[in-house]
Length: 235
Image (cartoon, rainbow, N blue to C red; front, top):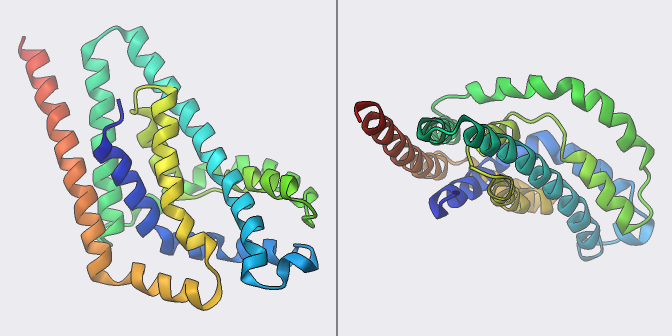
């Protein structure tokens, strides 16, 4: 079952991974803004409902993917019928938290290579997204957000690997919800506000603090899983 510390860690990964989100999706957000009806481009307050619709669709895609992978992981552990299988999934979750903590702190950037795995899926979905442009209604914006949620992103995929170990479809979806909510501030603000937020999230002290917190959660989760495995094997 997903712990409160796991949800908080996912929220931190989303929030402090916002610099990556701005770089990866900032251009997309700008293009979506330009595709809005003229009344929706007039001022930031007018853009906000459309941006919320985009992001609601994006986070819904994250939750769907998290539910699928969390359900697969939970079924695998159930079919194995072994306590060791559950502990191995917990160990995987702890290791992914460690990797994400190192990424956030700027100490290791290997996770960025994971996004190559989703390139083929995006090639199939990207034409669907194009057919939804230009945006003329909020339901259309929501659908476009659902497509956007499958954009290849190493950070998203890393949290999805973590979701496999969540234990169930509901817990996998909850983990991705935490991550998605964390990314919201970076993708809801534009222009100078985005630049200021990016500067804050990019500052070494902030990134090291966030990375250290996620590392702490990862060390704790990994330690619990290893201790459980040791007890199970010795018994």
